[in-house]
Length: 176
Image (cartoon, rainbow, N blue to C red):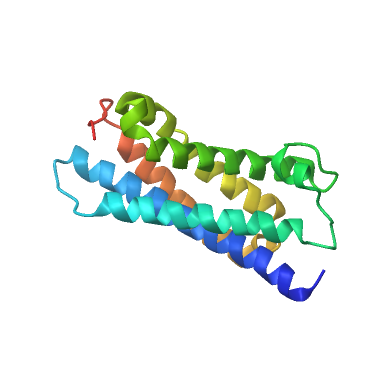
């Protein structure tokens, strides 16, 4: 494997993770603000743009993994869970995360056709997506193995859990 491919794998995965984190935080924050009857301008566009870029970078992450000559993944190992010999559980978490991200992307683009209620139910997968991606990064991401990076990820995870709690703490969900 060339060093450049290795750097691109790491960079696309890390930046996609950060974009996904930002997207989830903006989405949760806007819902918390809605519950407080506060208007939040342009957050939907920012939330969607961050998600779109996360999907683009995750796709690049997969493409670069396919070109990794050190582990030599076959295409099915990247898209079918538990088919690789290299760390099958963390890889499967990454695969499931990709599918949840893809489902979220497609259903968001089709939300008028599938109905807001159906879209909202499917969109509720995104907190799991963030948790899965965090687990994938912590279990397999070489940059996330460092204690300092681990600690840096616990802060956003704590903020995420707090916002998630605030989103659902009063029971009724405000309709978008």
